[in-house]
Each structure stands twice: as structure tokens, then as C-alpha cells.
Length: 137
Image (cartoon, rainbow, N blue to C red):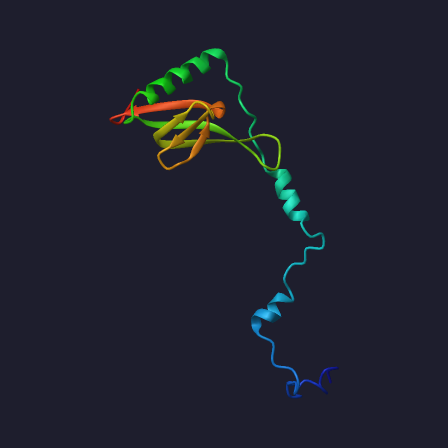
């Protein structure tokens, strides 16, 4: 005789007062518990890497200035601009590429405004590729 023989054939109990719990509610009871709320987010943030901002030498700055002058004098040149975006949470940032047409070069505010209204700080640009009729200049 087994120790469960006295209860093995009893009917399943159904409460008269409480509705049956849904499967979703039951499964939530077994979800992982984050005892230190935000700790896992902090660990992920610490693991995330950022790039250091590259400082351009005078020769590279002159090349970029000449490319900006070419863009300023022609509206049908497609450009790919590589620029630095500062990280809001930690030191460093990342480099992004933006391809399109320049709508305006705002010298006063040191900003390039692309045709889709993206604003790129001239001081954060490290490279500009010019393309005219599918040929790189």
C-alpha cells in the first residue's frame, strides 16, 4: 500500500468563492524574480562598449573643408558623411554614416542639414565621400 492511496482518487477541488486562475496568471507565478531591480540593466550598460572620438590632424581638416566647399557649390552630389555621436550615458560614443543630399551648410551654427532634415555637427565629421552620377569623386 502506497502512502498516497487515501487521496489519489479524490475529486479535484473547485473553489466556490474564487474563479479559476488563467494559464497566463498561473505562469506569471513562475517568472524569474529580479531581486535587485535594475541590476541586470546596469550590468548590460557596463558591458556596452563605446568608441573614442578621433581628433583630426590639420591635413585631414583641410581635405574635409575642400569637400565641404565642393558640396556648397553643387546641389546634385550625393554624400556619405561619417560622424561621431556622443553617448548620453557614458564616456565616448559611436560613429555613424549618413548618405544623402545636403540641403544646407549652416556655417554660423557649424551644422550640415541633410535633405531629410538630419543635422550633423561639422566638428564631429571625420570623413566625407562624394558621389556624382554613381562615381566617387
